[in-house]
Length: 545
Image 1: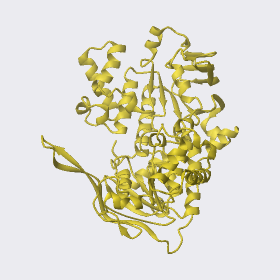
Image 2 (image 1 turned 90 degrees about the vertical axis):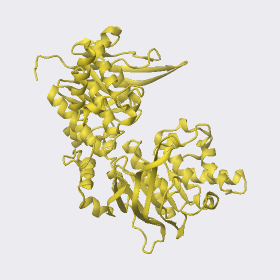
Image 3 (image 1 turned 180 degrees about the vertical axis):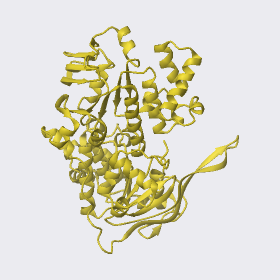
Image 4 (image 1 turned 45 degrees about the horizontal axis):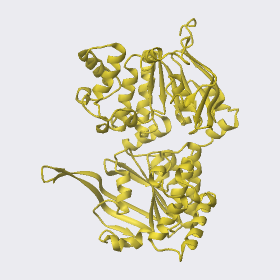
């Protein structure tokens, strides 16, 4: 590194304020940091801490004039960006400074092919012709590890996997050889195996091109393995900063200590001897038909779940792990008869597969589900009280509205929410609180079995730990059986007695959680563990991009 070269990025006393009507909200307050060429700085904190707002401020991408900067300076290689004219900013954005967004499916245009989207960056900034742009696009796709890149040029975002979409985003960000790359939660929406591949790719590209890297994340494990320095944000302020090794070894601020202590720990309570079997199935399958022709005849099937056997007892948690597309969620939906399936489903000793919907309805109260995205699964038009009480009304539980309201109050108290909040709407709650509402909705019906479909993946680590502790407590108190679906092995280890590893609809390995995670027999399981706990990308080819 040239000592005489100016600092790549220097942010001083940055403040961001949002205005809504007459109200004003300070999102960022006096933030300062710098990044040198070839250096990786992590900006970490929980949701709402101001990380993404700070990143968007660098390129002046906030919704102005609703957003404003009461104070601050943002210098890129000595040039002031704060308040710079639009032509100057256009020369910086996507050219000298690239940005990778958290959710590629939202950031990419669904109506444009991969080629058109990357070509646009090259044509606008480099003034390349169509032929030269196409050749550069091919080079970029190969650079970021897209296999058969020429065949992917015409693909649309929805035709790509999560890992492939993120690689396309990286290719777009690198199109003009930027000196600084801003990565805003670039691995949150992908599997741990793909996360490890993306992180390895970014570090290799950084070394190759000498870029500075601003890494925005809430995952401290990721920071430990990939970053040089870290700045911890809380409520719009940086509360601690320094070299990663020093901050992680001896954190000074209480908030940093809390973040570092928020990894899922412990194990579930032992299952009682002779515990009754709640659900079991043999040779279970969920096949989705592929239809073609004018008359839409079935020509083939997508074998989402193929010949799976699973059983769960009262008080037991069976963890189901695997990458996206492995069949985890389809298994959960199939077991609850929410999608069509084949194979006997024994619930409390009774085969519920042949039952018609009317016959199945009384049993449904005993089988509940908690979804990954609590905001998407809660009606925005209903109060929390109405949401939790809805199942009681459907099943005719409770003598009247007052009796049902008392049950709602008890359920909310049990999940750690103030019963008075039942008159509010879902958008008025945090992500963790909304997930507690979803759990209360399931719990109020006194079920025997709850399918938990990625219930913590959209939450910060600190909130994850709280939800895990809550689920453990509820299991002990009510002797609940859980089917816990996740790709996060750290959470599965803390929650599950038994683990089932799925790939391409089939079970590749299963057994007691401690045994499988300590001594995995299959290469695929070993790859999942290496990615989850050591952030190591698989080199054997057993994991696909």
